[in-house]
Image (cartoon, rainbow, N blue to C red; front, side, top):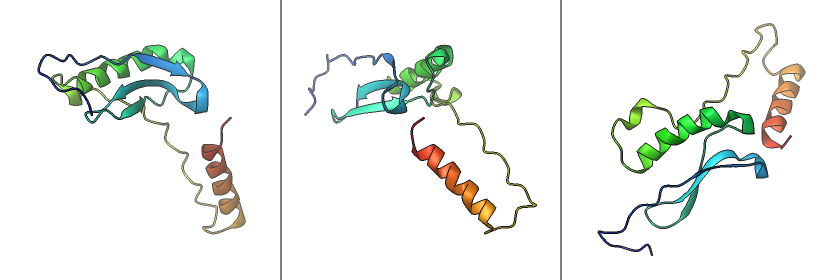
Length: 110
């Protein structure tokens, strides 16, 4: 059970990077019930630090109850998927195989 008290200060979680399990830039913190949580910013390369810092500051404002929280996103949106070619018939072997390959790429590590 978390400590209760009116003088208890809230710790500010630190931005961190890890290659483990493809996590990338993230913040580890404890929620209101004391359960450890991790907020990922969907940036998996170390060179994405400037963008991760912007997302981190927006997340920290939201986490600490700051004002104007909705102004900044707290996660990087993944790039949109390519549109499907209209010439490929629905249910064809080509469509099924390419969908299977896409699913395997997203499921497995590089």
